[in-house]
Structure formats: C-alpha cells, structure tokens
Amino acid sequence: MTELSPASPDRIDAPAEDQSLFHIISPSQFTRPLLDEVCLLATEARTLAKSRHGARALQMLLADKRAMLYFSQPSTRTFLSFNNACHVLGIRTSEIRNASTSSEVKGETVEDSIRTFSSYVDVIIMRSWEQGLAMRAAEHMNRIPRPVPIVNAGSGKDHHPTQALLDIYTLDRSFSQRGGIDGKTIVLVGDLARGRTARSLAYLMKNYSDVHIVFVAPEEFAMADDIKQHLDAHDIRWSETRNLNDVLPSADAVYITRIQTEYDDADAPVQHDYSGYQIGLAEMKLLSENGIVMHPLPRGPELATEVDDDPRAMYWRQERNGMWMRVAALLKVFDVADQFRSIYADHNIG
Ligand code: ASP
Image (cartoon, rainbow, N blue to C red; front, side, top):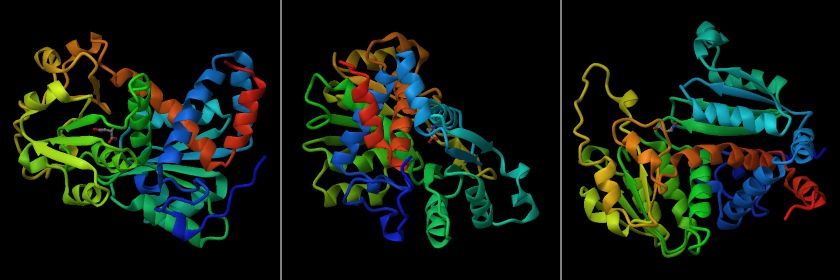
C-alpha cells in the first residue's frame, strides 16, 4: 500500500503541481485537471462498485486505514456520505458528533483534540461552526511529527470544498451531452452571504471558460465581495439581481439554497422575507427545457416538494453523487488513484 505523501505547509490552500492532495481545506486547491480527474474517478468508482467483484476490490483498497469523523456541527448528508465513502474503500471509521461528549468540555484545546485523533487514525474529516478551523487543524498537523490529512467537511460560513466538488460533478454529468460546464449560465439563489456551499461553488467557477454566474439574493444575504473579487481576478462574468424570474429562462442550472438561520443572532431574531427566492411549479415553467435545479439540502420553504417529480430536479442525484465524489477525494488523499485505475482496468469495464 502506498505510504502517505509528506505534508508540506505551503500546500494547504494552493494546488500542488502534480495534482496530488494531502489536506482538503479550500476550493483554491483545485485546478481544472484535478477537477476533471476527481469527476472521472467518481464515475469509475461507482461503475466498479456495481459488480460484486468490483465492490470487493474497492473495499480492499484502503482496508488498512482508519478515519475519524469529527463533526461538531450538525450534518446528515456530509456525515453519511463520508462515512459510507470510507466503507466503500474499506476504511474503518470512528466519530465524534458532539464536542460535549469529548474532552473539549474538560478544557482540551481543539489542537490537542485533533492531535489526539491523529494518534489513532489516518485521516480526520471535520466539520465545525468556526471559520478557518479546518485550516488551523491542517497547519497544526503540518507542525507535528506524524501528520494525518485533514478534510474540511464544512467550516462555518466559510467553505465546504467537498460539497463544491460534488456540485461540480453533478453539473458536469448533467451537461455531459451539452459540452460540459464551459459556456453555461449558473444561477445561485438564496443566502449567499452565509451559505458556504454557494461560496465554494462560485469559487470553483474560475476553472471553467465562458461561464456566467448570476447571484440572486436579498440585499442582506448578497454574495460577499471576496468571491466577487476572486471572479473578477479570473475574468469570470458575474452579475447580480433580485429578480429570479428574469433570469430563469436563460439559466442552465439554478442552485437554490436555504436561509442559514442557525447563524442568526439568537437575541435579535429577524423575520426574513424569502418570497422572491423560491422555486415552485410556477418558477419551473419559466426555466428552460434543459435547465436543471440543484440544492445542497436540507431544503426549507425555498424549494417546493412538488418540484421533486420534474426531471430537471437534480438534487436527489446530487446527494447520491456526494458519496462517489467523496470516494474519489479519498482516493486522492491516500494517493491510491493509480492503484484504483489499474484495478478498474483489470475489471475490463466498458
Ligand atoms: N448541507 C449544506 C451545508 O452544510 C447546506 C446547508 O446546510 O444549507 O452547508
């Protein structure tokens, strides 16, 4: 089995020249070749897993590895899809889903907790309320003698890089007969200020040519300037409107998100008017025949359940894609993509 490649501090939020990954902390680590590679790995892994032999071969690939799922912020999909992605690859998992059951209540620092996990496991997949915590954990790992990779499974309002990967994968598959993501108009709707999935997805758009990103949000939840400046710096066309209906006919994809009320100030609850930022049957009539609807889930009132039966509703597929994309990400983190490819080739698929 391949040894883990050595961590190096300057690799944390910059792409590695050889397209390798150690920590996954930020969408800034992903180049177009790397995105194309993980999309292909995800498709090949799901294809291989369809046969019993293939599924067994996958389960042997990382059977000597252990993962820690350290989720101090609630999660359903990300937790379950990572947990099951680990199991697809034979990785055994342990978990802390509530810091109140860990020694953090005794005053242990997050750094010490993370270092403790690293004594027992080969990768730490973590979600937290705190922006930048995954980065801090990765920096800490890079300072200790036996670092293990840190995978950011959502860091506060900041970023959610593996969700962005699965969103790219979903877009890529949806547009596979229409020239891929290049040249598409992607409309991001909702709480774009505090929704980390929209931020990370918008960030990754720098890797595609001739795309047009449209932000549709109430004023108080507008996309933050750091992302707009990043798009400007990469000559990615973006615009902003409050009128969803105006942009639906020209959208190739509508990525709708919920209001992130968990970040509201508990002492000063605000009543948000979200009525113009919803997708129901009336909005689906305005969307083009080929336009798709995505949502990172969980949904709130912004996405009517009636839309689920429309063939353009892509969010349940998007959810399933998450597990396969996380399999692909783990193949890269453990540096076994080549080994996987030879197993895939041996199975003579296609
Ligand atoms: N599940 C996604 C996240 O963790 C989206 C959301 O919660 O709105 O960010």
